[in-house]
Image (tube, rainbow, N blue to C red; front, side, top):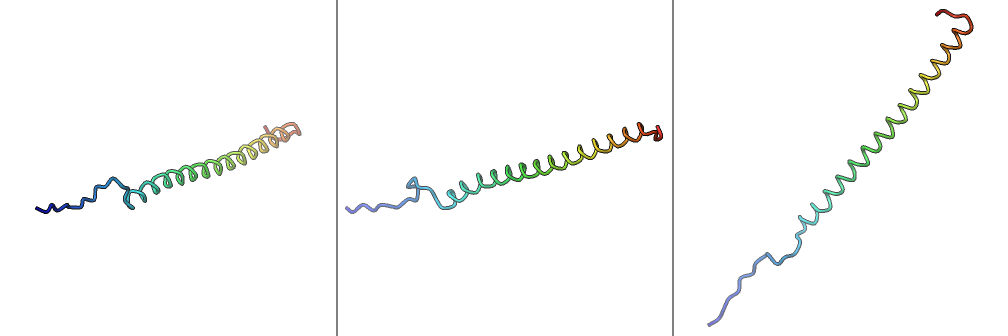
Length: 71
């Protein structure tokens, strides 16, 4: 009486596909976060330039009015 054993693949290990998915998901999350931070910093720089231009224009208008320009 000889018993035969069948091999099963459910040995409890991690497959290569599972490992790759586990690495790709956090990578995508990190890249999207960095992308958002980059665009936020770029928009902040643009906003600062617009604020400076608006202040300069306002000061020039006030100086022109004081010098007797049109109201």
